[in-house]
Image 1 (tube, rainbow, N blue to C red):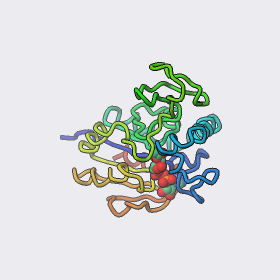
Image 2: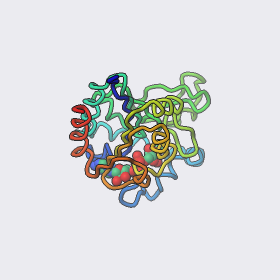
Image 3: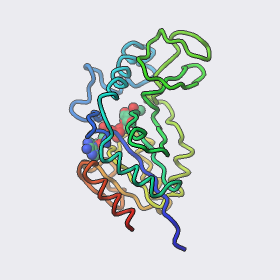
Length: 234
Ligand code: OAD
């Protein structure tokens, strides 16, 4: 039987690099002399909420200055071809996949354009700066609204759906991710355990590169459009 393939794609900060967003682990990995990990934990938010609000406010505002690049566009082409047999899992908190036109997207690490109540976890769409003064809809208290970002030590979103999709996938493609942060770094092993063909597309070999069946190195905006064309043509 000539069954249509099921594709799962994982993206990381590298896919947005050519749009002008910095990756996490490039240069010295510091933001105003803070390690990124130090502004991306529940402890950091408890210790210095204004610093954490400012970090994400700047990143949210930056989205207005950047646009999707050919790598984001290539994933829209892939989705248009495979439709419901396609799932895009992103670790990115930017909105470039949606702005390119991707529809079947799961943001496993949350989104800059979402904020949530720390108490009830109710999330709302958020376009403006977020501060301690903002009241949440549910308990109407100050100091409770936080960026809807999965911080270090917190459980990423959609894990059941993602593992289910990996289990059923024929092809798993990881793009622009260093393979350092788990659980996403473990998706290739999960896919391999169910005989999925695994592909890495990255600027350079990632920490988990040896686990992939196929590797393509270079800028995603250059490598991915050709790779997608070859996959669709198969
Ligand atoms: P990293 O900054 O760890 O890795 C980015 C990867 O993209 C590196 O392997 C680069 O070599 C590669 N890269 C850079 N430019 C590229 C290009 N033009 N084309 C292709 N690849 C390129 O980012 P992530 O792996 O996404 O978590 O980091 C994972 C998570 O760690 C993030 O989601 C974030 C962070 O802490 C949270 O915020 C919860």
